[in-house]
Length: 79
Image (cartoon, rainbow, N blue to C red):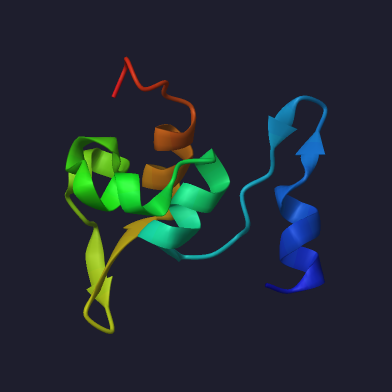
């Protein structure tokens, strides 16, 4: 991960700053939320949009910036 991306993920005034990318893979999403990647793989309902991807890139499920930003604000009970 680049230093700029690490800096963007740091806390700023009590909120996370989401890196400005068009697509996020599940591993990126889990890292932002602090969710274990293997847990998210096994429990689809914990993934963004309940596991329904916004698209695929290189055969991997990906989600858009908007979907990820909405998902990050939800707690496990809201998902």
